[in-house]
Length: 227
Image (cartoon, rainbow, N blue to C red):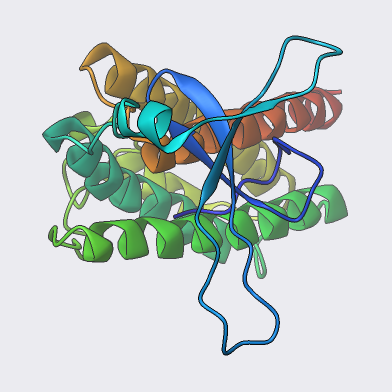
């Protein structure tokens, strides 16, 4: 499972999971001393705003639908997004000896850190589900049309040749396009019926939110570079 960075479902030391169409807090209490058997799982159904939650009986728990399983659309999304992130990391790797603006270097460093972390999460997700983990260049080398926002080999070559202010402008412009492509991929995931598995949904929403925030920062930076 991927850690959620934005949503706190209940402010108690509990394990929180999504079950079916409703959200329920699963509180696992262990006995003290350790020799005693662990207590039964308690499933708490949150109440209306301002109202206390209600502990479901074992009979009620047995009627809850299981969380949705992952689908082929989820697998394809993760596999393709690994390749998409790989190109973004190629772009950020060019910044150190080409960029002039400290702001470009700082933003590129943030993108590099977040996308490396997300790539590791996607690889772990695929491994845990017995799906193929693609090599970072499998998806995009020479095939810019495969995924939205991917740079063509010619555009990557142009970026490699640029230096200073010209590089800064190209990098920011291309990264905005690249990030917008990732947002499109998230939309395509849900349009294809994917994203129902809680872990996939959480990850896709976080990618969408993170890259939308970075797009706004990139757009502000591009306006400064054009001035």
